Length: 109
Image 1 (spheres, rainbow, N blue to C red):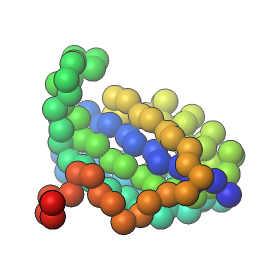
Image 2 (tube, rainbow, N blue to C red; image 1 turned 90 degrees about the vertical axis):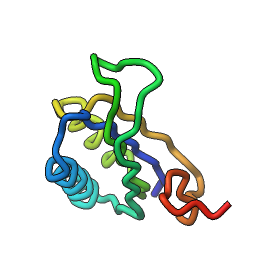
Image 3 (spheres, rainbow, N blue to C red; image 1 turned 30 degrees about the horizontal axis):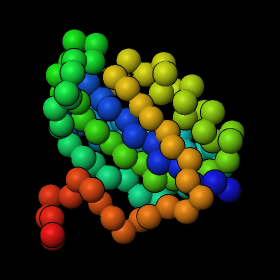
Image 4 (cartoon, rainbow, N blue to C red; image 1 turned 180 degrees about the vertical axis):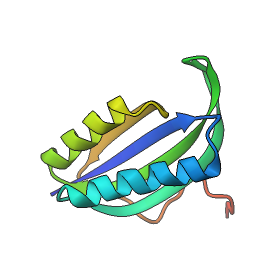
């Protein structure tokens, strides 16, 4: 099994209920395709430096997962077809850090 970080950017005009349903949809998709969601970070509504498809903001959801190549292919194919997703990025890691949250609301630095 490999470790991945999958970041999804949803449209800015979605309601919180829609964002929660996207989170549930992808976590169920991962768990049903021989994968395991280790952690989900909700980074919230963040501004873009440049417009992406005429959007200036987006809801960021960051999944830390463990899975196989089959899991990754299924996630990518479903994400490409989802009309509520503006962009996504998947990165493979040898080891994954579950402690650090870069966009947490309570920064202790």
